[in-house]
Image (cartoon, rainbow, N blue to C red; front, top):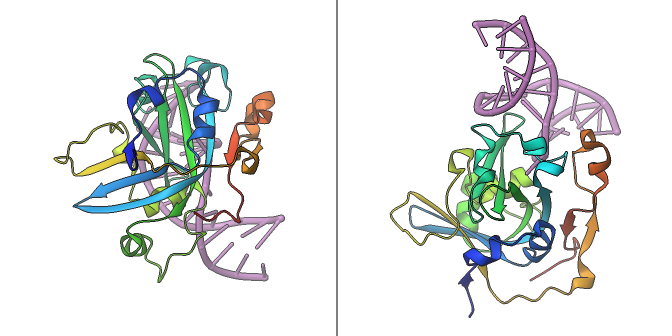
Length: 204
DNA sequence: CATAGGATCGCCT
DNA sequence: GGCGATCCTATGT
């Protein structure tokens, strides 16, 4: 039971907000050239598809970039933000329903040395994985990885991503809930309490 | 084809 | 807390 990969049914559910909440405490893992890096997910945001103005899929918008979100849950949706940062999302729900969860922060776990080389800094601290751009960078996730399956155990891929349940229990009372970051343009939808995080004092 | 802008970060004051 | 970096994507002509 320990270290089990989150299976397809986890991602195929209708309620993306529940999924965002439940992803807290799960472990996001990447495998590159035989090297594992991972971190505990400590902050997420739900993006609720065509009816959510803050979502890239709002109003049914569908482009080459966002078409990943319309596919069956269990894929990575990664896009470039501000020309610099790759932001990693988990696609959820069934094909045709463009739900996604943005991973906004991780607590660094495995492969610290590799993370250090990826950041180009001298060391990694507890806060190094705070912020969606930082979290993706620590794990080596790049926007070219958009569309990769989170369910595949193929080791032939140059890059693999999956999420593990390591049986970590999160006290629901610890979860801080609030409006999403950087979506002021979304009008009323900017107020939706779709951001979930563990307190800064969180330790595994 | 041209252009504006973004689900951010880190450095500067 | 203010701002520049940096470039793909979406949109409009």
